[in-house]
Length: 113
Image (cartoon, rainbow, N blue to C red; front, side, top):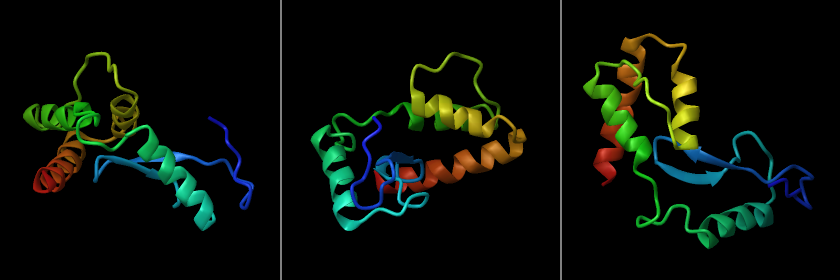
């Protein structure tokens, strides 16, 4: 929501880790101080973004759907922002590449369940 870090002077941003199916600080694209990372992590905990009872299953369901359709992206309107953004990232890839990506995500995610 546009909160500026006091130490780094960068916006404090979350990212969604598709492989882990959870929110985390966007530390790969930003240089945050330890206190800024703790602030972002506290935000994730405060709003229970990664709690099992509140975590969305829609990305996992989308991945299963793509695998069931041999790497073809579904043609319905997505009501989940993460699914919509993920689908946009996949849209310029072949169905073989999409299938392989989704299969890898499914295997890693299913092993953690």
